[in-house]
Length: 402
Image (cartoon, helix red, strand yellow):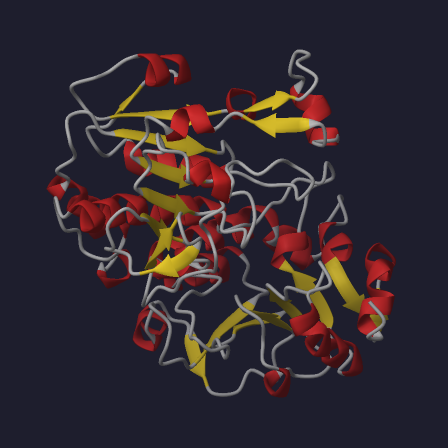
């Protein structure tokens, strides 16, 4: 089997890659029947020379490879027919902007395995960048609070060489003694955010103490869904029932918004669920949050001030609760918003290495043929020029009817 790491062709450019140079070398040593090459790329954070230094060939043309590994969507004119591709295609949720991409994949007889659809037998995702979204998103939240409050200045994450340099910047934090940070979400993203908080002097407190007590040192609390959602009929909250059917529930987040300074949103949101806070909530005279770092980034959704995604180049904007419109980030009496929607791209080296570890752990063996859970087939949207049975529901989308 010959595997090629393709250069990223989507714009804006993505500096990540599916495998680091050292991981490629490890695979070659452990799996002598696998040949690995990297396509030349001026964009990657890992340079061509880094691969050459580990004995990995760097080539212009990957058309003689059997398997091609990418990160973002491959431009249609760069797709090579009759290959097995891995990349985030953003098609399985019927995203209209990528319909033509899926049509081209079918026409070119490509087996498409979307990273996001690779799951174990229980349906749990095996490969994701979510942890690094949380890491960078929480750092950006603390950075943006410094900019908004004019108390301190941190180096932008994407200007740091790696995560270690970024975390060294946290020594510059100069938070108020009574600073309070609230975070929602306990999955991969939330855990990533906590890794950053643990590198600071911000102390963890319970949701109850966060609301009831004052502190003379910075604190944070992490909310479970039961802490900020209740049933509308006043019956006791049942978490599993909520996840099965979130209708008939209401948010109680406002009590935290009245005492918190920074909110880091790392939750997963079902569009049937109540908004965490509304635009009307933000007009309440006791609203206290000055900066929202919306890592989840659901546009016009549960975090009312997230009007649009922001970019790595321009990560912040302001939200004026009175006019309900976007304003300058530093405007007075406004809420600062950080809503970058491709956060892992800011630490491409670390995110790529983490991604490669998951690939080696969960996908490499199935790819070589030992696949008792049928991971590769179940994640394949297309094979032999047509949709697989698992993705039959995309047929009308593919034909432009959905």
